[in-house]
Length: 237
Length: 237
Image: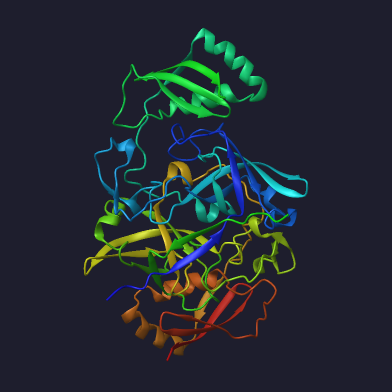
């Protein structure tokens, strides 16, 4: 006898423009890279200014979104979190993996500004972990009295990242000054990004050149225990 | 020119059995009534024990669910939160109202126990604000380092509830002893429930008898500033 499976359909209310243009490099949780910037443009009819009236009174908001590049063909009950070395299996509901039965993401971010552009609501967000183009399903104010649980104990979430010094080659320093004209916070953003060590736990080759696409730049670096060296910041095509 | 509207379909992974059998009486946020109990029964194929492996290491979890009794026919950009007296309009995204474009609820609750019954995963939850029969879309571990934002400032969320003493008539005390045989925590649950003053802000008639359905009981009470008097606890049919 089959079990009745129940479905629900939701509509995109907006879309994210993010400093993260590809999955690699995105911090494993929001809040870890404070200088990460994102713009959430609401879409009609949800974008009318009335819909965000009063939201500016809150410093932080929840964004519920779709992991649009993490679609699973079939249900997998366990995942191997890369940060745990890729060899420990945990139940999917015991992780915040993108690969889950319903690919709904949940991130608390700083609400920097609510802007109305051509009569459409636009939110400026900081500290997010969103991939470019992320579809958004809901925005909710962050309420400390219910959302901040002081006594919460956690099992596997808090994998220690050792302290990392980020250094730049002379050539990169020149490119960085250029880039800062468009993105004043980009130096601090790169530092925070690499301090979080985006390399998967099972692949930590100090000779390997890693790269990721941030804003309209390709960032390249090498990373060993304690030091990340940025070796290129090239305008992407 | 029309705007392309994008939809996503998700599947129910489980369903809630709650102490709250109707909407009236449900606290306005989770965590306010710590003794509120709920059981989340996962459904196949998501209910396999592997899917919750490791979850017991966490004290708290996020439940993402559907406000299944709050379906809006059309988008309304503003709501009037009842706790604010029902006469202040706020943008729907500046509230946690159930009546939102995508009726997806978000609650952090205490994970009391992970149980495997007939090879199906069942979670025992405390402090929830779920209506009986709530369909669940996702379970995620609560991660303090990203989810607990100490510096968050909030605008309208924290409406003060004055201190309330809860008293029981003699007749109710007898019924309460009976009820405690099935639900040992029911007295404390009722006290917390009424201390949160479930009455809407615009309707505070001290002579009115309020009622709500909890577990398999009808609870009846009167409430004035500072005192709630329970006048009946009747077995529901």
